[in-house]
Image (tube, rainbow, N blue to C red):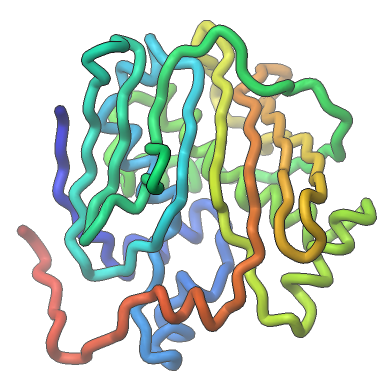
Length: 276
């Protein structure tokens, strides 16, 4: 088992969101302060830090990642990131991010990377979304997550940047389903998209690439239940190199529930030390 105790601080979260172009207000200190809440840690920030604990396993032994986003982490709290090898399967590693509970697990499943013989169908017709890229974004991401292997850094950045590609598809809808999601989260419904789960298929051998001026994402949104549950299919490439295929389960959650899950701000009572 490997463990790392970490505090996700406001400034680090802000820098992570700048690097991945995440503009969700729940990660904005000024907005959340007005709501009397601490900002919420991006799920991909916590996941990337946890996966980095087993970077070698990710690069050499895994071809599949299953992620469950069960609850939220707020800034200013200690979180214990953990990885544990399955004693019955040398290819499987359990991933955890624990505050008062494991935010990456549910009652019946846990987040893990493993090796599978067959995953989900990654052949689909989708809409290409090309995201421009500044090398400084990747460098900032690498520093915040603490990655030393550039191949792992590039891969995890591409996975995290996919969130921006999904939002680009919603904000610039071209299909009926995209229009429906756009109306749901950008209208007056006061509902936000929330990752319920994420599955990632990794090509073998592990994709090695150098990010250029852009990364290409091909995206297909599928309606499961109108105004409630959707699947997003994503295929990611960089200059002809396939980086990963992924499948997201997106659920619409009322904003008031998200704010209820966020931790309250306690001015003067939760000063975070500069070092620990």
